[in-house]
Length: 315
Image 1 (cartoon, rainbow, N blue to C red):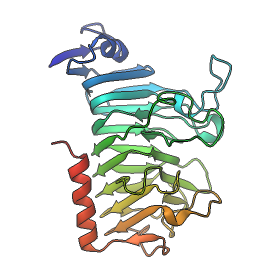
Image 2: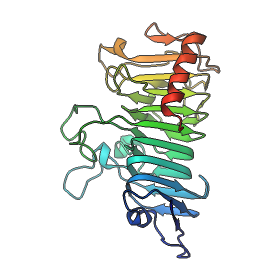
Image 3: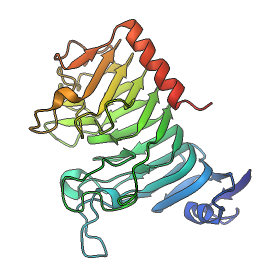
Image 4: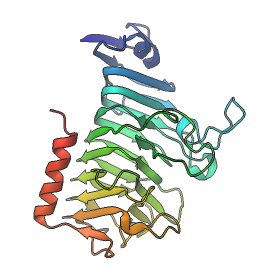
């Protein structure tokens, strides 16, 4: 295992995260230890087996500020998938004890603004804050087809789609519109899911796009909180593609969560294809949902959670 240190004061191997990542041979397992500071970088990290460890989520911050509506040097706008602060790919990724943030601003002003684009085959995040507004965390892969011209412009646009498996524990993820989205399979355990209040009449936590037979997004023992969003204005999810799946289990839901729980995608009429489920949730935002939201019994919940842990938790 190769160990590399990053310190902004010049006392270590490198002063930027990007330089440290570029120094690592693709096939060499590496651990990059990042000192305290605000690292204003747009990071591309594509290695076979790499770990990034900060000095704490409140002390090590990776920040950039591109937005989907912002002009790009090529004459177009950035669009969603070029707006990332950090793009991760390769085979195995672990990120720990740091913040990754896109500070471009609210989507109404700058468009989608991705903090972390996670395309690694297997990814683990521990004690990480992922901060943004619209489209904060993208769990790859992309859907097969875009709905608008240049909609997928950016990393992996022309690649064959490959599934990813992702695990998040004790993380904070913040945003307002579709801020956890994509076609990957992901388990979120004991995380804080925070909806930012940008004065919107409706907000959405997840926008899954995976296949009907996939796991989708599973949240267990999480806290769904908000920055004083009005009661009932935030939905747990909506299907970015018709067969997207999200399950929220044994979590605490604030009053900002809509009584309906989940929402169709705009005016589409195929919402019954989505796999939205809940079990054991408490708090002001919990309660009975519409018929298209499955209420799991204890056996169904245990089976789903066991499947999610078997697939997503590291060995």
